[in-house]
Amino acid sequence: MDHTGYIIDTLRRGEMPSEDALVHLIEECDEESVSRVCRAAQAVAEERFGRRVWLRGLVEVWSRCEGGCRYCGLRAENCDLVRYEMSSEEIIGACREAYRLGLRTFVLQGGQVRDRVEKVESIVRRLKEEFADVAVTLSLGEQTREAYERWRRAGADRYLLRHETASEEHYKELHPERMNFHHRRECLAWLKELGYQTGAGMMVGSPHQRVEDLVADLRYLRELRPEMVGIGPFMPQADTPMAAHPRGSVERTLLMVALVRLMLPDAMIPATTALASASESGTLRGVMAGANVVMPNVTPRCYREHYVIYDHKKQTGSEAAEGIAGLAADLQTIDYKICWEK
Ligand code: SF4
Image (cartoon, rainbow, N blue to C red; front, side, top):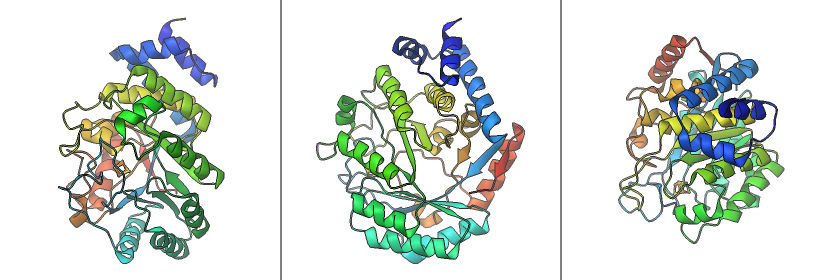
């Protein structure tokens, strides 16, 4: 059997292909192999989920952050960024609007701050009281175990915390000394223990990343078995130390999405905003590589321009409702439709 066929078959059997084979595939990333792996991954997604894409309403609750990730525009060291924080009423209002549009999962995402445990707890509780049929996802970085526990008890269902890289050496290149590779993993383990549906994931093409690191990411994801996996290309941001590094390859990102779909057939995998920002047809190509989630941005327009994790972030330039209608029309061109379930 040829190389690509061996990798597809091995992953579909639930086994891990050899390191050499994966390194070769990811390094070469030739058009024919990428499209074969994507077709196989799309078939797996279709078997499990049908030709459907789930929507999650994203609310970017604040641009404050104590973290210092060298690739991210929200890093605490970036003094040029406008920092905002939505009030509880504004956050709940944005979720109400998302609900009115038919969305049944709210994703509250923001920089990593440790002083908003109570605020988040009370918002989650209010959302779960007001909307009996929604899932609440949090994406607020590394926190104490107690914070995760309180939010879980308040009703939070899911938590997104990308591991970013499974290589400690690479982690140290991307993060300042005050951030710790093992703590990130500890947080992911806590989230799992606390019963969150947990999301991990990584950037493709980030500075200092080796192909072997991407293989390590696959191994780590296989071990962690997260319920959600977010994968996007590295996108540079002008006010960061990594501004000059070129953006990650769209093809390699699609390949990684497809490999993860083959490896974790039941995972919810978004066609990320970074992918859509890097390529005009990124969302549809993501779906055709096995992704099954899209996260429309329902943050009030006045805040969106300040949530600058990277530059050239795709803005629909319209209200969320128009964005969703556009997405439905785009999906129809590849014979997919929106799934409104939580
Ligand atoms: S990636 Fe998250 S924790 Fe790191 S600087 Fe950006 S918002 Fe903060």
